[in-house]
Amino acid sequence: MNQQVLLEVKHLKKYFQLGKQETLKAVDDVSFQIFKGETFGIVGESGCGKSTAGRTIIGLYDRTEGEVIFDGKNVHTLKEKEKYAFYRQMQMIFQDPYASLNPRSTVMEIISEPMEVHGLYRKKQEKVQRVYELLEDVGLNRDHANRYPHEFSGGQRQRIGIARALALDPKFIIADEPISALDVSVQAQVVNLLKRLQKEKGLTFLFIAHDLSMVKQISDRIGVMYLGNLVELTTSSQLYKRPLHPYTQALLSANPIPDPDVEDSRERIILKGELPSPINPPSGCVFRTRCPHAMEVCGQKKPIWQEEDAHHFVACHLYNKEIMAGKDYSQTAASK
Ligand code: SF4
Image (cartoon, rainbow, N blue to C red; front, side, top):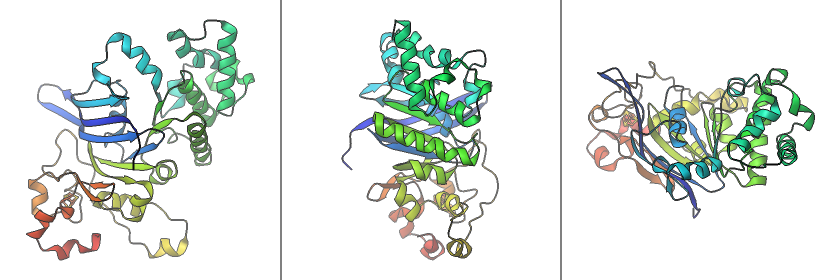
């Protein structure tokens, strides 16, 4: 891969202080790069820190540690003047389109608001024309401009949210569970719309979701998160062909396959227990309390982030040759 990096996340941490004693480690040392023009998916169970990571990247939350470099600039140390230009380039689409759209504003007001904040299209007619164009871009039409959010279906409201995110002509969009609140029949339409817009406008996406099948459809590469940590990262096809991390293997085994013969012969990996609290995460490997391959060393050492195959990264002791050289490998052979 020889692509240009648009966004680089380096050792990002986001902790929330809960009273004097407790710290919630929502994002705990996460690093990855996103290339220009690609869709990078982040997947994981609810509570794994993926949305907090997205919000920290765009600057909605201040980071605890680490860096976010966008187009060569550190997002968290921008001067006031630079912030305006930055927010034009990076926009967000939210999970619940109804909650993110002001119910008292018309679609025209909702979509044109960012243009007004940034002083674009000072002539009213230009602004109106731009809103019409954006509505058409997302599969709506100009007649929708004078209506209110409650007059639309969930899918149409998400289209309005997408049009608003596009209003400033951004380079990069963080889509935070943009289809989870929609009916299954509408989800594919919104995914197809995002794909089309990406192609037409040369956009780069960070697509956050808990549903692996949808993430696969849209993403070039996927990062898997568990309890604030990135545990695996590779291309979308490689992740499905050869998942390495026991957590990814479990997530994929729970994903139905349309072929009934393959589906019947598959082995399901049922994870025991609940996601532990990020206030008091397990020592060593954070997945060890639910991992079917956990070894003694997993409670003592945090696994290193290593490149197991070309462009295929994983954090698990099973792939650490030094650690495994001293172990009985037979108990873990089935996972390879
Ligand atoms: Fe399982 Fe140990 Fe690998 Fe963690 S490091 S995923 S507990 S085998």
